[in-house]
Image (cartoon, rainbow, N blue to C red; front, side):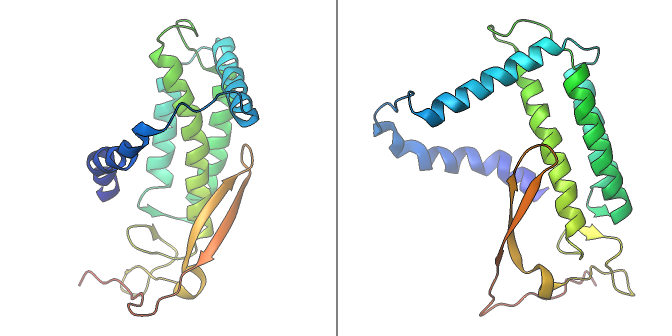
Length: 196
């Protein structure tokens, strides 16, 4: 919940202040090859979404993904549920790209088209979150792997193998590469959390 609150209340103020000095930046040219490539990819995706003309609304897929995440990648999770969630999300993503229905037109204000783009991203992110939770064989903080708890039911950490910052690189659907940067603790060291 803290992450939700920080993102909702803090980021709009801090990010705006950070970007405020950028107002003096001159217009950025849009003819660079990277810009043209990105613009063409967005146009291709929008065309693809609008031409599906399926039966199910964007909300249908959004709610289905939310249920998978709630049931199998919540604050308490286990390997079996995470493996199931990954397969279910992959199947849902495949269905989304074959059967989503987006009313309206592409070249007008179209909230459903905008939402469809976000849900397409959420499908990728949901799978990645499950993969990340599955590869982390420990319980740490608010993320409780049921297989990793001590005899009294407290979270069982594994700082020897999981004291790193993780960044996942997207390489295409269901293809992510994990990059790790080991954390070094010189003054304050990680300890087992106890709620007793």
